[in-house]
Image (cartoon, rainbow, N blue to C red; front, side, top):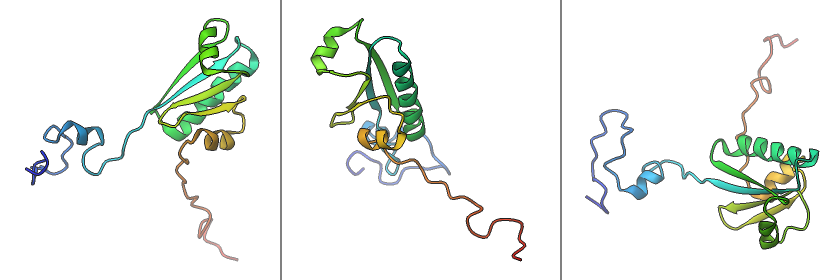
Length: 143
């Protein structure tokens, strides 16, 4: 054993059971897996206005397209939880704050410009899928 990890684990073909590995390595999906980060957002709104509903829908759509299911959104209404508005010094709504991963990031507005909102919130780029018709596509007739 090296650092609590078996030197030669019995893989049995395609092994998916990571119980032989310490908890820290299992959280990372094994040795070579990706690090799973859960993004945590809090959206501050004032009532169920059109702009508030639009901001929530835009935030959820943005997170689903960039993060998959690795995110959590909490919506806070000024009328119901004014103490949180004071605590976070919210001056305008809608405002979204990314709490995790650190550092915190704050964006004011309805997030309708998805690219600018993603950059401001520090979200990862979406996976680029190459179009099959860019090179050599079509019906094969080059005339």
